[in-house]
Image 1: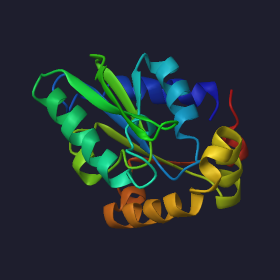
Image 2: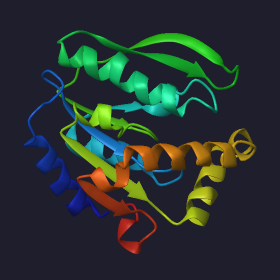
Image 3: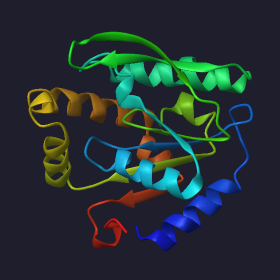
Image 4: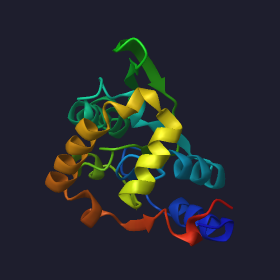
Length: 188
């Protein structure tokens, strides 16, 4: 996605009404290695949004379902009630919870990560974006990013993703879908 398209998307997002109290929420979901974090950072820079990464919330390699629930109970529901939100941060190095961190108050919040686009979370979102890429490309990206930390867990995590996305119908419910392995997606 070039800068012109990114700017147009940021402008579009700026016109969306909030659905989580006074916060407009954009969810970016898709399988590991599809470019969610990179895209979220670029979109935040173009739109002035804050970004919340779901990977900070997964309670370990079997925690996709739990983190998806916590996006709703710890972040979106409190925001909708006008209350402060926080996340239970996971320490991947020590494999344990690492306390709670506040979610900064923001008019525009991007929540990115596998499981962010659950049906329950979508009830609070103004936009759901789905990213995807070829499986080999996603694997290569994930290994470049997380290497040895992820390699032994890839298959187990991918199975959770497939089950979650099938049940939640995330791709089909997305407002926008992008393939991040196409030439037009090159970073601008």
